[in-house]
Image (tube, rainbow, N blue to C red; front, side, top):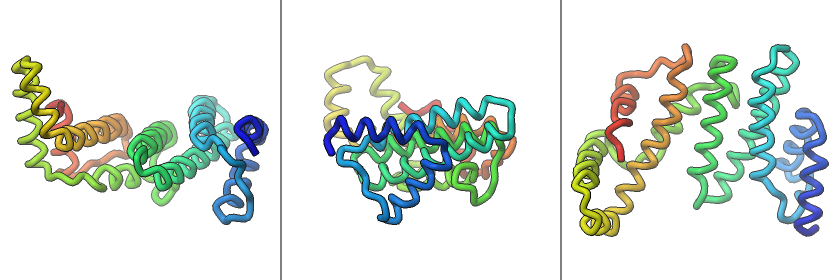
Length: 205
């Protein structure tokens, strides 16, 4: 099956309701259903996310149930993409956690729910930071000073020699942006350690 056929398959799949798509996905994960070659997994995740958010803003309980079902589909696919595409895993996980935060703000937190468990986001923040708070604080101050000096040549040298450190700081800032968004929820009760990290956001490059 080529790209055109895979595109048509996705179009037909998205004409189904969320329950039918969930059934198809369960069969795929169980290796009981073949997936078309060149299937657009990201397209499925993004459309599912859009539908989840649109339905979350409607008033009926039926729409809210459908919204959560589409959010579960998107969550499952983003997790699959992150696991199978290491180079882009952070991008996919950012999208996943942003969706979860959005849904929690709409419907509240529910422990052990695949979409609404707030600790799925908090635990994700601390996973694979590869840097302590104190080290991040020092490196952030160093980068702020270098960027404020407005010396393009020296800044480029610093990028060339410390690019990995800069990437780590940007990763932390991106994750903290989602945590800050989540903090609008009444269910968000950060401990002292997380509050310290949140205070670092504005100091990061």
